[in-house]
Length: 407
Image (cartoon, rainbow, N blue to C red; front, side, top):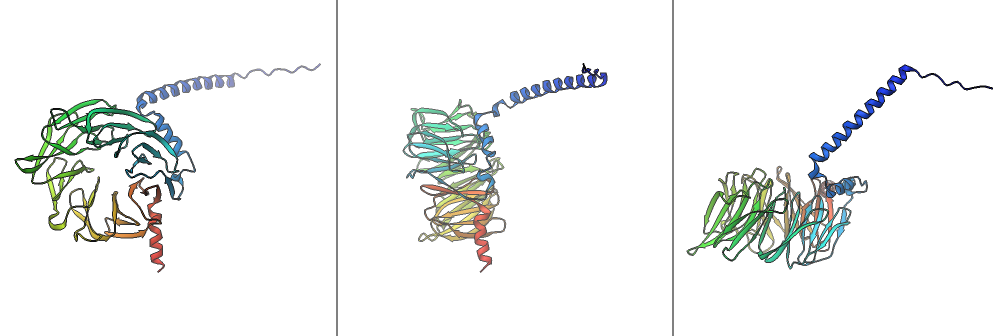
């Protein structure tokens, strides 16, 4: 009878095995400690919304990985409001707030009841309200987060990329009250204006400064007050008074300065609220369309009063004129990024290379265009009453360049 002899354990390999088991336990412990540390340190960033975006970019059929244009359809509405929120298209109507991804899927939807809703978007939140109505609502890309109803109507709102926001209403004693909230929806301060109507309010991207523009009558002379203030303070940082003028539009640029458009001129201010440049409208007329951005600002003026001749003026953030030309057509919207400007017409679009001062105009496949948005550095979204189309910018205008070269 044969017996299998069990081989004797080799002390050398046994020692190595014990060491490997010990190292494995140490590494497991270190990994657990590291994981818990990451969760504690970045707990504010671990949200269902971020997980949704992680899954989004793992989708190999996503338009992020293809060169195809995408069509997003939605219900038509007279009070159409649109915007881009974290790369998705937001559509707001009197009864609904909808968010569509670039595949055309509705990824968020909830009911509202506003006659003429206004949409604000930032890197953190979307805010929806209606001028003259009493409530507002805030959502992220995952769900509706907060809503509040005021005693008096809401007239204006502002939203920063960090989530800080402000709303303009009034009270029994004051013609305007500005309610300032932190990113957790807590009302942190109130700013009161007596006998002054607030026509514009903006918060810089970092949420460290707020711009308040009020118009008022001073013994028959119409004046504008431009105030900069820390959001959670009632003490002004700067005050500018403009005589015999009316201002309703302003915004910050990338360096903390700001641009103001009045009925008479464009004013360019430094981050210290010093006036550095002025562009007078004089006999040119009042801007029909405008754009105020981080790097550039633009106005379109019909200087001939009749017809569809649009004189386009584009300025850098220091107020220097960098582009000026006349383009014919029914101008619907202006969009400017770091390098290019886009003029959207009813049935065509113009791309302007600001540095080279050159422009290309192409016909769109359909008429009725309303708005143009920047999806990301490579894509724009053109909105129509019932649908929107995403284009890769270089491919959209490359068709024209190739046809021009073949002539």
